[in-house]
Length: 200
Image (cartoon, rainbow, N blue to C red; front, side):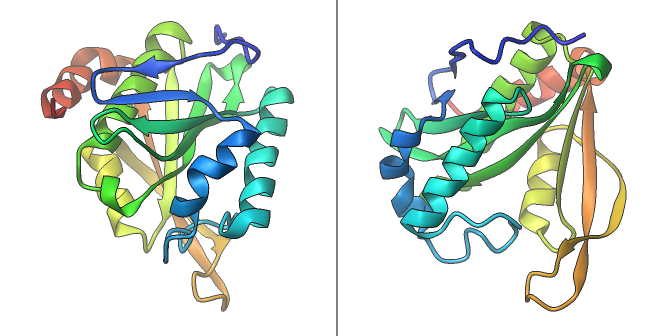
């Protein structure tokens, strides 16, 4: 079983990045990023504009209260700016399994190593504090950047969910790609490999 308290104020941080629980007041921090072009292309839940972003954040907070998700805002310590958001979702205590998703960063934070720092902290906390046995991730099949990012942090492709998402162009349906990382993989080598990739 997972050892996780949804009411706890968890903070995950290193010298590069800080993740803290998402609050409704964070609309102001995240709105400039949420309004960047193309940031929601591969998300079936949109957060562009004040109304959509407010609903997006409130929904995440409600899901935390319902003990289904735990959303974070991401702060880049080197740039001294809020960078985006991510969350634990599909938290299933009886299976000791969780998923990481709803991850998005502003354009100036991509390719900086920030995502690797975030994933290292989230994997470490999930496996070593929450006692998770499995973390799942996923992406639109067309989202080659996210797929490459998941592979670069040690995740293994498991399969395809056929026609799971509305198509990006709004016409028809498209597939999702499933990835995972397991506790034994993290302990054996993936933790060390990912740590070696972190920029300081």
